[in-house]
Image (cartoon, rainbow, N blue to C red; front, top):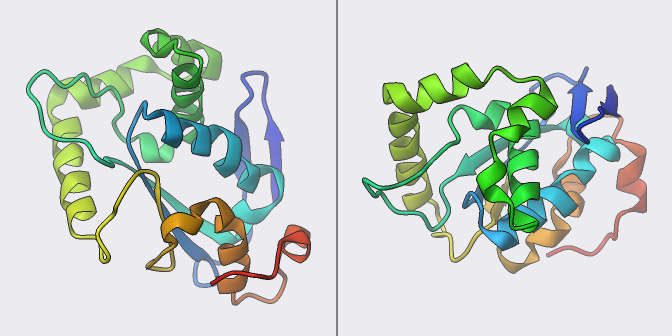
Length: 187
């Protein structure tokens, strides 16, 4: 497994663990929600630094407490494949600069047209409805955002300790060294 931070502060990762050993981690969040942005920028990024990304299958579901609106300025489409873009946009949200979201494309070297085409073509709306449906059918229902689920188990209020839950759920032979330094207490 290798990871590094590029000039834009974004992590790029390659992993060698088989998908059958990986822990499923889903983050249900609301784009530009300050609490969600802080979780993504300050907590979730740690999985890239400490090696946990090599043992997880990470899904980001941008819906949270959102609702469908004709005037919705949703700009994220297929973004669950582009953690760097999410990180950049949420970082700008923390700084109160979310209107500068388009600068993230340049800083990451991402082609803007793919995201905007997805949004303008209606594919974004299809994803939006799918995320809304998935979020509405969580069990237990999500009570706030971010809502963290590890192997189909909600962490509830203990979402900040998600790394410990990942390590506990991992069934592979060689957990990352960071699992040894995590607190052993979890529900």
